[in-house]
Length: 363
Ligand SMILES: *[C@@H]1O[C@H](CO)[C@@H](O)[C@H](O)[C@H]1NC(C)=O
Ligand SMILES: *[C@@H]1O[C@H](CO)[C@@H](O)[C@H](O)[C@H]1NC(C)=O
Ligand SMILES: *[C@@H]1O[C@H](CO)[C@@H](O)[C@H](O)[C@H]1NC(C)=O
Image (tube, rainbow, N blue to C red; front, side, top):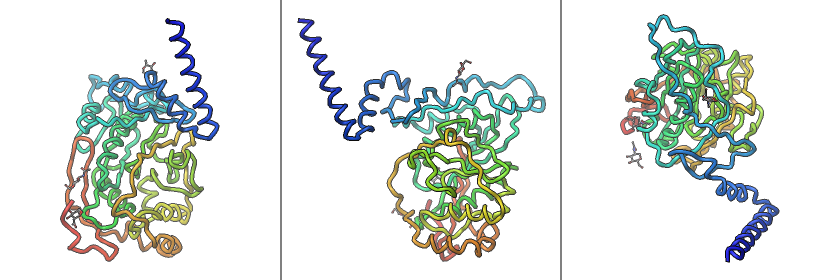
């Protein structure tokens, strides 16, 4: 009896292999990878973060972004006596595992980040950081993405031993989204708070996958999201500046900030890249191995439709950048909520007709 059972099993496995080979030949690589993923699931995932495996390409990062973070403790010395953090953080570990556990709550994220103080601020407890980085995230109706981003970004930044804070810039009302103007607001409001040496302008749906991607500024404006899964982990085109970028306050002022008049999806990142070139700067980037990001999938947002005017606007940037940017920005802060994991700045940015009273109200 046991022999025939074994034979039966063998047959089953063979059929399975043949089916898989056929699928593979027809080019369904992803599907095959998925089946293999199911077989190996037990080895791949651990603890409460279990979720369906993702095809991770040729790399299989295995460690958790929170690994060893609990080893960071406050030493018994006065704040003034803390040594400077080393040039290279000992907690940086390379590519880590990115999963999106469906049961995760904001309260879980808070619990995992005990050293983060109100407003989403953090300083390394055991050394004095040489870097002060503000993260600016334009936002509207993306609470689920925000939860995952915070879950990864907080430990990611702590591993790099940065002094940092996270600002959410929430566009009030239902009028068409204006990413670049929200980033301008974020710059101004963050600089009111602290003397940041670097500002990271960060889309809410992009999760970094490698903590060697340092969130510090360079001598020139930096584009960090060089390799996104959405574009096959390659740059879509040479001057691409979308997703995640970083400027010092000086670089930012040199280009007169970002444009205020791009309503809807697209174009504003190219406008910023043109500003960088026009002021004689270049774009720096991490390597494609390090600047990797996973995009959280979503539908095209309501209220953020493609901007049909973007090509006309881009054609004029050379003439308009000095008259449109930081020096002409008008907005009204409606509320500033200091929450455990971030500061939520809700702002009325008006409409393409300007800042009008009737767009205020509602969150
Ligand atoms: C955690 O610490 C252990 C022991 O020091 C080390 O071997 C391991 O590489 C560390 N893991 C990460 C991800 O930092
Ligand atoms: C925005 O849209 C929501 C849902 O469509 C609606 O309930 C709300 O009243 C709108 N707010 C404004 C200011 O128009
Ligand atoms: C930010 O504050 C506004 C106004 O209170 C609120 O409507 C919105 O949901 C908040 N967003 C986040 C992400 O906390």
